[in-house]
Amino acid sequence: MTEEKAAQLLQALRTNEVTEVTVSKEEFPVFRNVLTKQEDMKSFRGAAKHFGTVVYTYEPGWTA
Image 1 (cartoon, rainbow, N blue to C red):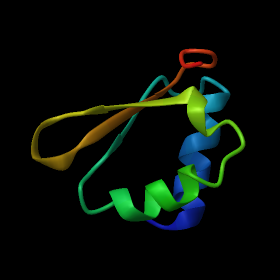
Image 2 (image 1 turned 60 degrees about the vertical axis):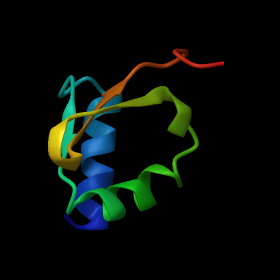
Image 3 (image 1 turned 30 degrees about the vertical axis):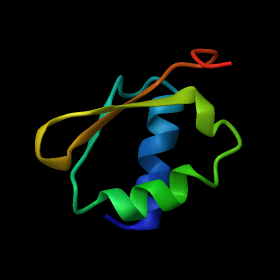
Image 4 (image 1 turned 135 degrees about the horizontal axis):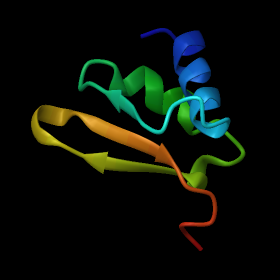
């Protein structure tokens, strides 16, 4: 995954084009790097799955 692709996926979550994004263990470092630079980073919720996979959703206000 490239940083550009990660940014596109985050934007797709924000605009409800997709309801969730699945990130593999191998893609995670690049995705996380882009995610942590987002102003609304805390609106993205990651759920850990088997074998290092993380499923992200966009839920504004889910955390304090």
